[in-house]
Amino acid sequence: MSLLEIEAVNTFYGDSHILFDVSLRVEQNEVVALLGRNGAGKTTTLRTIMGVLTPGSGCIRLDGQPIHGLPPYEIARRGMQLVPEERAIFGTLTVEENLRLAALTAPGAWPLERIYDAFPRLAERRRSGGRQLSGGEQQMLAIARALIRDARIILLDEPFEGLAPLIVRDLVRISRQLAAQGRTIVVVEQNVVAALSFADRVYILNNGHIVWDGTPAELHAQPEVMHSHLGI
Ligand SMILES: Nc1ncnc2c1ncn2[C@@H]1O[C@H](COP(=O)(O)OP(=O)(O)O)[C@@H](O)[C@H]1O
Ligand SMILES: [Mg+2]
Image 1 (tube, rainbow, N blue to C red):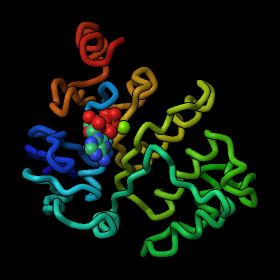
Image 2 (cartoon, helix red, strand yellow):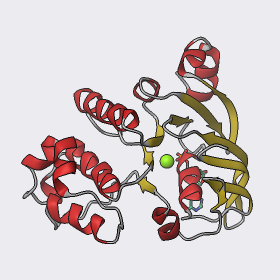
Image 3 (cartoon, protein in one colour):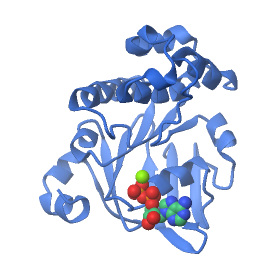
Image 4 (tube, rainbow, N blue to C red):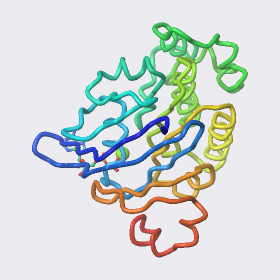
């Protein structure tokens, strides 16, 4: 049994059929990258896993238990957190208030100090308003909010978007550390190089279909796959 199993999932927006029999699995402790062009269905996949969207058919299991059809807060309670592309930081609250708010309803919430140990930059910025943060700091805060809730599985939607290469390198290092400490990560990225630098396995989505899966090494060995599905 895998930690997370998605089996033949079909997802719709109204009449628009977006995901077609999507199947994937994520093992405990793995970093899985979900790649694909703009509009391929990556965000839709994460939102379906998190329960923001209910699949029209198919099955999603966490720890072997079906979770499709459950509301997002119930799926969150079982240890999953989605860090959305838009980050959804509260701009009028400070870093620390954003963290406290996230911790509020989580049974196994971390103490703030544990978050500040993992993200020294956030400790320095604890009194700054969300709006004053740089893009990289906002992304750190968005990930930290998932962590403080003691998430076992973190779904990251384009965490590196709009960030300078040095900041991306920093976030990749943080993500690697999280995986090494036992967290499981599903990351959606357009930045293929960065995603491949810390993923254990890769799935490629094209027009709502999973068209390829394998390891980063296997993908590097098949430039034609990168070219036809990722445009690089
Ligand atoms: N709220 C929505 N209503 C209708 N169609 C949507 C909505 N959100 C996304 N789509 C469509 O679903 C498809 C997949 O979108 P998305 O999952 O956001 O792709 P990606 O994250 O890979 O760029 C696209 O064709 C997009 O236009
Ligand atoms: Mg997206």
